[in-house]
Image (cartoon, rainbow, N blue to C red; front, side, top):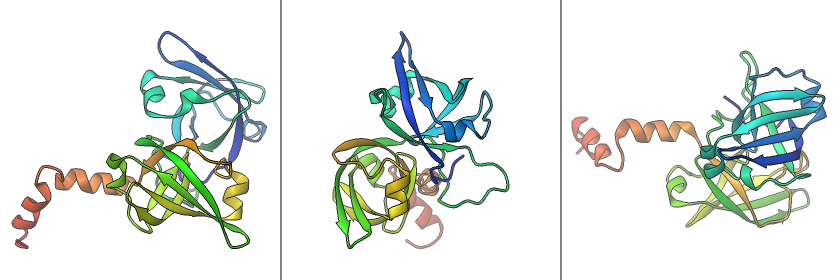
Length: 211
């Protein structure tokens, strides 16, 4: 489990495709200095990966075919920066929102517009299967960064970026580019429990006497 508060930026050393999956190697002196262990979980651009090897400040990960299909990690190139967050430990503050590291869909950053002297508006295009979970002032993770939805659009949403987010993550780069998206887990559980999409919500309301 993660919070969407990025702890460090890593740099891609290599991405080697294999018959099944791929191996991703990242360099991150700041994260390596915290002495991670083999088997630790790290969110890389919002996707939960497991450290399989450590050598100096380099961390290696295996990427499954499912990860390559559902995320943008297969598009990474040597030298590219990525957002990194170690898994949340018991007792640590939950500074963002509950992020599972399970990417729901990918979207496109379409624009980054200045708002006043120090703030920016980021516009993200998202697919319909994710948009049903997006609500004004709700939470969303964009490439692993915990953000608050400012405005819901017909085919996407906007978020506000503060100067710290622009400096400390990859979201300040020039669009367009593809991003990993994860909706708030609470909305997904509510949908599942109510059986929405199969008339389940109406049935629940009738049972409760509202209809």
